[in-house]
Length: 498
Image (cartoon, rainbow, N blue to C red; front, side, top):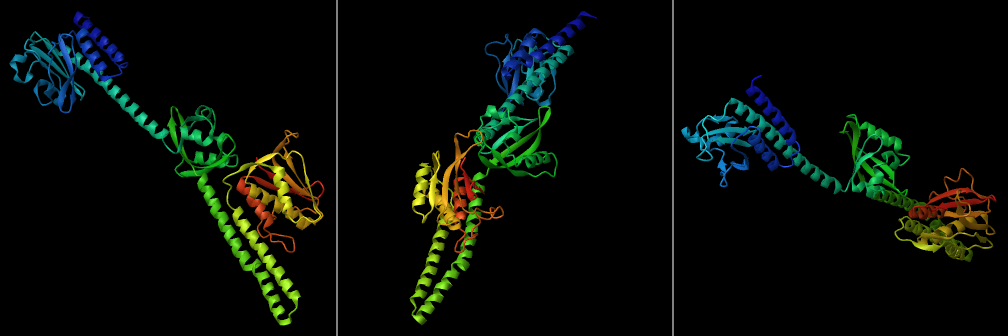
């Protein structure tokens, strides 16, 4: 192998090392500076520089250490040898620039020029004080070096564009009102702040959880089918799914999911919008529509019957003058007044509770008992009722209706007891709830599903609205009510408030 070939191979190897170093450059000026230094040190060019195109001009980016202080100026891309190199994308080696007008040498003292395009972004030029200073090997090596420079600058610009794009995307995602997440193999890979707001967990906790741990237990199978269905073209675009927050609160989410490649695996990219308030509004409208139908039914039937009775007895009273007919008409009108009052109360209890206060439960119970016509009935208040957050008027109305129910169905000598529910894990501590039980005949198991229906009653003169009002008050507070057998054979209502 000749010395010239060894020297060329050495330079090629060193230029490849420059390409490796170029990967560490963080900015274009740094990459251009490295390219000029390699041209000086490896290719041993006397003077050189790199220009980049900006707004139709070739603007100097980096020059060699031998470049005089006055350097060279920005030129148009349609001017001189540099302009021709850029426009054609070709390399030129000029043996003697003084013989070519178009060459326009950088400095008068330089005789030969090498001009090489830097991709489609600029031009590299080297000059020598001697004529015929650059041969084909110099052209080839300079082109190799500039290919490394061009690739390095392309990478830097691509990374900068990617960082900018990622920043814009992150800003968009983090500022979104929707909850956005990526769920991979078994757990969340990414969540935005909105996911944390909706679930109550912080972002670090969520990244260790599976989405299935958040989904309401009754919706998990359907949610899995929905997620898996996104892998096919027939999958639904979105699905309403309930979740439980860190405090056990149930929220309704409208979820949209698509399958993506995430790293080397497949994952789900999802967005979710909280529609809980919308569902509550729909539930309220549905309840109001049901109440309207009930009003229509009562007005057309239940109120019409006593009205007809009253009119009939008034006619008899006019014909006979018997005062007994007036008394019967008065009883029918009292019945109408009672039905009207219960209807108005039912309508009022249909609204959700907006404000509550901390109430002494025993005090509320005794005030409710005091306004009910109890006859010979007895009230027993067990120890440990404690305090409860509730709307006082509605809570008192709840007890009044339960007390009236016991007296109407068990007789005016019934004994009614009110006490706390006790949790199975701590029998000595009252749970969040209470019971009302009597010692009457109780309610058959078949009737327990019906007692809260509006208009259902087994009493001869009952309206069927008392327990419906209880159910509405319980629902308005977000509580639960259940009907069970009492220890003494009567009926036991259990209201769970927690």
